Length: 492
Ligand SMILES: *[C@@H]1O[C@H](CO)[C@@H](O)[C@H](O)[C@H]1NC(C)=O
Ligand SMILES: *[C@@H]1O[C@H](CO)[C@@H](O)[C@H](O)[C@H]1NC(C)=O
Ligand SMILES: *[C@@H]1O[C@H](CO)[C@@H](O)[C@H](O)[C@H]1NC(C)=O
Ligand SMILES: *[C@@H]1O[C@H](CO)[C@@H](O)[C@H](O)[C@H]1NC(C)=O
Ligand SMILES: *[C@@H]1O[C@H](CO)[C@@H](O)[C@H](O)[C@H]1NC(C)=O
Ligand SMILES: *[C@@H]1O[C@H](CO)[C@@H](O)[C@H](O)[C@H]1NC(C)=O
Ligand SMILES: *[C@@H]1O[C@H](CO)[C@@H](O)[C@H](O)[C@H]1NC(C)=O
Ligand SMILES: *[C@@H]1O[C@H](CO)[C@@H](O)[C@H](O)[C@H]1NC(C)=O
Ligand SMILES: *[C@@H]1O[C@H](CO)[C@@H](O)[C@H](O)[C@H]1NC(C)=O
Image (cartoon, rainbow, N blue to C red):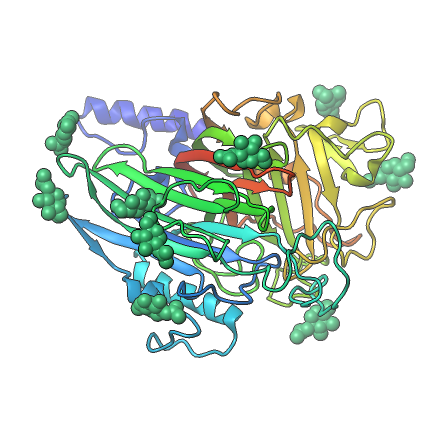
């Protein structure tokens, strides 16, 4: 506020003397974008796609698709020519296609990580305080072959072990990567006044979805199409995700990841769009979200999903998968997800306490005051040595390292941060532009650290939006658009 007043004085002085000072036109002038592409307005697009198996690895490449990292990066020359920076040879690089690019490794998992760096170098845009590379579309299938021992348990090699109902798998090869198709961005419209491109494909390797049309029953599908009027407004990202009997648990997100480091959920260097990694409590996230199809009652649509990593003793993550812990928090906005596991008579699914905006803590045992309905589920890291009893440990297999998850639901207690306060807000037929105080919210949420450890400075190298469709008896389709995405941090 103070700064704004000073700013206004300057502006007045500038007007009087006929000088225009940029950046003083609103209260937001105390903030700047942490993104390489503030508000998705840059015509010369940078976007990439990645695919993960249940434990955020590759395991096996899909036939003729190469390693599951691809990019669509181009410069728009004089408003009339699209000059691509990544070609089909780059995009189809894979463990069987190592003819160039200098990627040397026999590991399919490491190959993908190195390919991401390679593509990042091609797409990189010089900027201050550091260069950035691309938006990241992320795909993930929850299929888990317990007999194949592909996924570690809390970061340690484990199994084989018998199948469990919570892990879908139709048999050998169920953890495959999807087929990936790519329509390179091109000029569109009667007078070439817009740009359009897409990534799309299926996990069902015997299906043919090359026509880019949502397939019927029996076939899984994903597509992300981006479209923009040249020189105007924001890119609009249109997402489609469909499950099938063989692939009943699928995820599709659009991520703004850090440009260096491990981002959330990974233990290799990654590339991204966040040229400044936001830190709690001082950052905001803005975007427009229009949900057209929800994905059924088990589609956990995340209004905002934030990911980070720190060790239980407060040290930063260093890639050691037995002591690093990925931390996630997300708000589920699908009102059809009718359950809330955190309950007064079963508070092992609740965080130990809730913190009010003024800092007052409410113990989950305080049945009168704890906002149980504001929480879906909390789970402790599998390697936590002193979690508060009673506790519920997170899925030990779905990340390369142990993880901690705190899922919240629309509720009046989040209104102070600009989040939905009622179920159904922002859902189908209620498209909205959100400005969320993710920084202050993420500062107030409970995350585990060892007793006595110095509280970590919480930083969030992954900020994303999208859905996770869990196993359902029917095939489900989710469809939504995202535009005007921005992450705002205070000016120094
Ligand atoms: C290797 O890359 C080429 C394009 O350069 C592609 O046509 C081919 O399908 C790729 N092969 C594999 C096995 O991925
Ligand atoms: C649109 O762009 C394409 C490719 O650059 C070009 O071949 C075509 O002539 C253009 N069409 C119009 C109407 O300008
Ligand atoms: C392109 O055509 C549309 C109508 O077809 C028009 O509204 C628009 O102004 C045109 N854009 C340019 C850049 O000429
Ligand atoms: C896939 O379908 C398209 C038509 O949509 C056809 O042109 C193509 O040959 C088919 N591919 C295969 C491998 O069957
Ligand atoms: C990709 O382009 C082809 C050919 O223009 C089109 O048939 C298909 O629908 C497009 N796919 C998507 C997902 O937009
Ligand atoms: C990884 O962390 C564990 C637990 O702190 C430690 O025992 C192990 O030595 C570490 N491994 C490496 C390679 O540093
Ligand atoms: C914090 O807010 C709560 C609810 O509004 C209020 O009851 C409490 O007195 C406040 N505590 C302090 C220390 O201001
Ligand atoms: C919450 O209350 C329980 C029982 O009254 C107590 O054991 C626990 O330590 C309290 N937790 C916190 C975080 O204060
Ligand atoms: C797909 O299957 C569902 C039942 O799972 C059924 O309701 C729906 O009509 C089927 N759709 C088509 C196009 O066959």
